Amino acid sequence: MYLCRMSKENSPLILGTERISKLLTQYAIPAIIAMTASSLYNMADSIFIGHGVGAMAIAGLALTFPLMNLAAAFGSLVGVGASTLVSVKLGQKEYEGANRVLGNVLILNVCLGLLFTVIFLLALDPVLYFFGASDITIPYAREYMQVILIGNVFTHMYLGLNSVLRSSGFPRLAMFATLASVVINCILTPLFIFAFGWGIKGAAWATVISQVISLTGQLIHFSRPKQLLHFQKGMCKLRSDIVKGIISIGMSPFLMNLCSCLIVILINRGLKEHGGDIAIGAYGIVNRIIFIFVMVIMGLNQGMQPIAGYNFGARLYPRVTEVTKLTMKLATGVAITGFLLCNLFPTWIIRMFTSDLELIKVSTFGLHIVFAAFPIVGFQMVATNFFLSIGQSKIAIFLSLTRQMLFLVPCLIILPMFFGTLGVWMSMPISDLIATLLTAVVLIRQFKKFHTQQMA
Image (cartoon, rainbow, N blue to C red; front, side, top):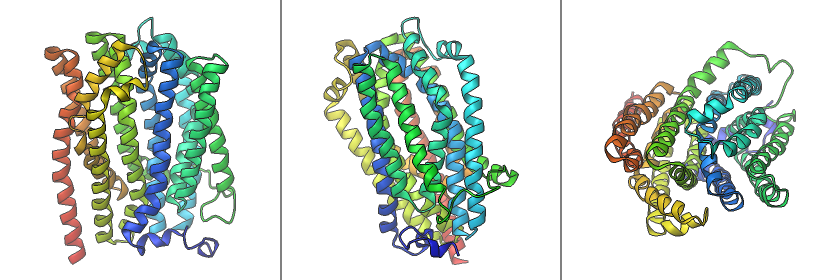
């Protein structure tokens, strides 16, 4: 009954039969467009703040990254876990189960979003000072985060439903939802900053309003009974088996973002101690540039996820291996492109964000070092996402934690003691290199296991 309601193009069943290259193109391109647009928005946001508010405002924005990562951690806990669970259930043809996942996504995002908002609005200033704020930068960080936290529930719902939308056979609609948010954001941000004079707070309001508008479109889509996945009576009741499944799968990206929060705190505090507010501002710019290429790779990962998840659920292991290897090749190409651009045109890229000469100098220095090992980052990101896509969250968690906690944290603690600001910047490429070597060993073992299972 469900299948007749869907067109062949949007049916998840083609994930097990269509050519892998065609599927990856169909699913990844919309995701890449959406993620790239999102990263370009973040870049444009920083540009508007840098030129419209000032260099210290960029430093203030950089101080919000740990809190933003923490919010993203809770969002990914539900979104990534639910999208993988939906893909696997569709591969197993458990359509009612997939619908129940949709309902639980909605409730979990509301509950976690509200809890996060209340806690951090009450303790915002102490948290920001702990993140490395100074009396100069905290007003900017506070104004920005107060607005973002007010809209946090809508952000969680928007991101969670977009993940389910993509996994349920509508990658283009997920792309359009993101694009709509980005376009509205890019229109409202300069309007609020330059025309209304709202400063950095204007950029935050633009973010919240644009996501609310996109969320409205998602809610309309899932309210249509003709869709395979749609809101139904009683589906929003939390079910322990679904919640456990979502959390167990989503725990890896949750811990990854949680670690990212800790990492950014250590980076900001290290840079503040050895380089001051201007060094934190430089990291804010470098982080935005990295974000562009990381988002493209994440778009590839999002395109791979439903394909790998469905075929793993259907026990079509050669197709899982094929889509993973193809995604790795494309991600490595993206990472190499980022490496070349940032080494050939660093100053030109930095000048897009600021005209402050000291900030340009420090940012260019950091950009060269951070991108030193960037060509291997694509492989590492896809490999970790591969284990998420097939529901092996423990391995994904292990790979995430080793890169962040076992390698990067010790580097951020030890190297600055000997090399100062240089040690902070050096920590990132060194940990990337070691983590990638470990990931390669684990991935090869899993591919061999697939081959054995297929031959049995």
